[in-house]
Amino acid sequence: MKIETNFTAPVHALAARIALAIWIVALVLAGGIIALWLDGSATRTQIGESTERLAQLEVRRAALGKQPDTPSAVEIAALRGRVATVNALSVTGGRRLVPLLALFEELLPADAWLVTLSHKARDGEVILVAEAAQAEQLTQFLLNLEKSTRFSEVLLSRQTPIGTEGRRAVQFELRLKERR
Amino acid sequence: MLRSSINRLSSWSAVPDQSVGIAIGRSEIAAVGISAGSPQSRVRWVRRLPAPAGWFSGDPSPEHAQLLRDVLVQLVPEVRNQFACVHVALPDPLGTAAVFELDDLPKSAATRRQLARWRIAKELGFADGDIDVRYQDLGSAGGKHLLFSQAVHAGWLVSVKSGLMQAGVTAWSINQAVCFRFNEYQDPLAADRAPGALLALDSDAWTVAIWDAAARLRFIRSRWRRLDKESSAAEPERIVDEFERAVLAYVHGDPARAVERVYIGMAESERDVVAAALNRRLHQPCIPLAPDVTDENGASSRSGTAELALIAACA
Figure 1: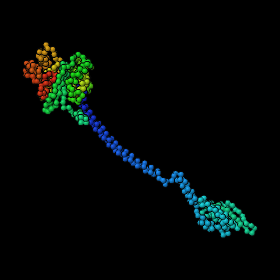
Figure 2: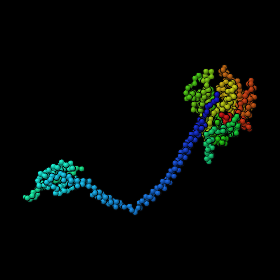
Figure 3: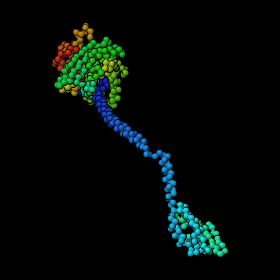
């Protein structure tokens, strides 16, 4: 039986393991360096392309900024104001007057007639003055208006007797609100 | 540069093709480099230098380590700061070794180490801190557990390790000479299946090692040699005489013990004289042992220290 005692630490037994570990670490580091180098090369290429593209965009932006026909910001603001005014004027949102007159013709009794008519289409308001020989005809007209589905509100704002002794009449001033 | 680095890295991961043995004696330090070959290794170089004055005598000091470094720098420049297979043999009398027969072996390694340290310290008469102890379980024989224990002088071991480190030499193993010798001849001894004894002579020390039929070391004794001229002529006879007494004491200690073969291991210059003295006392001739290495110039066998360095290199 061999004597296997030893008065020193058997460092050589660790040498192979340490050498293997060094090799592995070296290979890992080499792999990492290669990967970083490749990544750096790709990044350098991308930087060149991006710089070139950025320069092109700068040139295009400069060219666009110098167009002579482009209105200034003040002119654009003034144009927008005019467009808004035109829109406000052209778009009333109310109804036409002819159908309204046709309706009044239906609702007026035979002995009553319209004296004045004011139609605020944007506000949906109608102010009219109707006249008749007797107040009963105008009262009937008032009832007909109230029955109509066209108006949401019918208000008698003034009742005025007019005429001389030979010819007497009554005028009703009515304020109507159209249904929306 | 890249090729050089790759070559160095590849050489680190491989087993070196050269093995170096260093034998540190009291009067001489020798180193032998061998190249591993098939079927036989070959001696590449053999170098010897005188040991520093006062080496392995008295108490060690930090200067001893520096002196050893200076010697090693000249002796083994090719292994400095290199991944090289280096084995270092220390003279046996620098410590002691014994095989204790125990009824029961402690189960934990710590307790075994403590037991080995206590028994060795008791045998040597040293304090625990003065020795560095190693042990090995050799199995059991005759109902007893065999615990091989060895110890070397801790201070001198530190000096040796420090000197090696300062010289940039990383030792794979440091052990007593008898362990290197016994391991080197283990295969033929095990094949014999016979209990035997070895008388080993180095330049500065001699050792008796006895093993059983299972080729397990059972008895070790070593002594420093007398190097004065007056006693050198009569020294072989005296060593053989002490060897015979040690073998007889071992055999008579237990009826089950026996020594059937006697081997000698030493430099060629002393082999004939010692073998003749030994054969006169034995009923059969002793068997010389030599490492199985091709040495074309025979440089390794001219000195006991060089021969021991060669044996260490073969470890």
